[in-house]
Image (cartoon, rainbow, N blue to C red; front, side, top):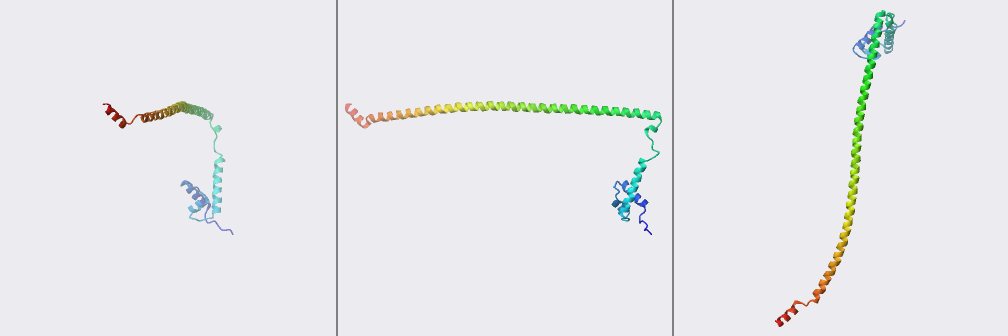
Length: 190
């Protein structure tokens, strides 16, 4: 003789549904906890899976489920017209949204390109100005080098001329009589 199950199928299903109502996932462990940790996990899993399969099968194989074609022709035609109108409006909405997004994208792209072109023009002008400034500085440096060379040559000439004049002054001073010798002769003459 087989042993009777500790928990009835009805209790397992009710525990699973209670978990679903609470917003929890009814897995075998959660159902067993809901039952006060009674019953075997394998049996709980089998009963719950069988219940879920029955529910899915009941929804898909409902004989009393009506289709659009089963409705009276006036209602079916009105429904078809409503579906066509809604589809047309949805298509228009999607096209308008796409066009709006495309125009916004084009505008943003144009703004981005415009800013990029302005920055490129600025840097191009900046580079040109830098090149002009560098050329001017190089020319000024070359002029200063030339002026420095001319001044160095002039300084050398002046040093030579100064040395020459200093030598002439020294020779002239040696040639002049000393003041002691010239004064008595002046006194004698007076």
